[in-house]
Amino acid sequence: MGAKQQALKNAARRRMAETGQSYEAALQDVRREYEQGRIGDEHDEPRNPMGFDEAADATEYSSPTSTYVTGYFVAKGVHELADDGQLRQLIDHAEKHGQPGHHDPILCNLCDEPVVVTKEREVHVGLALREVQQPGHSKPTELQFPVWTHEGCGHTRVWSWSQLTLERRRRNLPIETSSLPPKQHRRRGRQPVEDFFAFSVPEDSPPVFYLQPGEADRHGPMGFRADRLSDGLPPLDLTRQDPPERSDWVIAADRSGPLHIEHRGMGRWYQPSRPWTTFPAWLAAAHYHQSVIFLTAPAGSVAPAVLEQGGSDLSDLLAVGRQDLLFGCRMTIQGLS
Image (cartoon, rainbow, N blue to C red; front, side):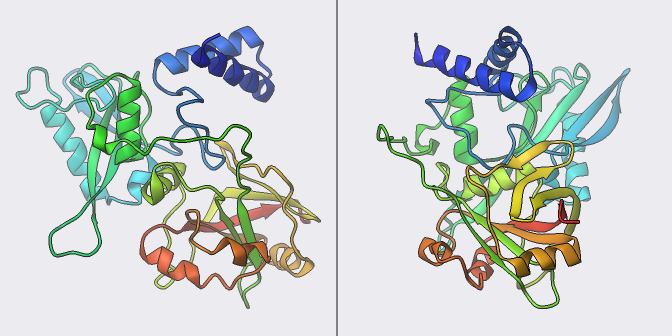
């Protein structure tokens, strides 16, 4: 059996366990999603334990075009990077350039065919993030490019440039090979590094729960940033702002500690391979405030040796936040009452 067919059958078995579908129905769904480009070979890129397969909380903008009404679906992560005026400009651009026969049409980034807004029920709007080294600057500049997508080609999200390039290669579209992520070299039998976590109890504040991947993102810090924006988690700079309260994000817990993290309407965002354990003062503070400040940043943001000791003042995250690589919010905690 080929690697692709085995990967699809493995995915179908997981889908069957998660949804209660029959194996045949789950396999049919997985094959259809693979053909649409919504999932790829497991051997090409493994599933990250954090996040969702599709972007969370798209917001619809409706705009009449001739006798049709096109819905523009903009992922919530895009709202963290662009204001309402900029989003309106993007939609106005689509209304102008998406007319039949326009000399400079907007193209779907996942099939390279024109997006004709008078024929589309939905147009999905995302962003691609690309770092470019500017002359005279020590740090690269982040550029943002709109990503237009037909409804049938896949839902919108925020992409890093290498993520979008890899997705285009999966669909046999032209790419710049220099923009692909590094090849993965996996050693047979090697176990993945467990993710790290830390708990702290600031004074007069909800307790803090910090979660850090044990493995570096294949697409680098920019890939981590794109994924968290697509999940709907806001970026944080703790030197300038307090974590916003998001009642739709929930941490489930019992008397031993947190159990999993979920986003209402989307399902579980993170399920640890082993139960998290914390100390009584943290649980007492979480029960008192009925909420937790959840933070996450790319692998290596805080030294693993510090996290393995079970404590940190998390001062390292101040610099991470200034680089737009710290994400989180004030989440509701349930199960402690």
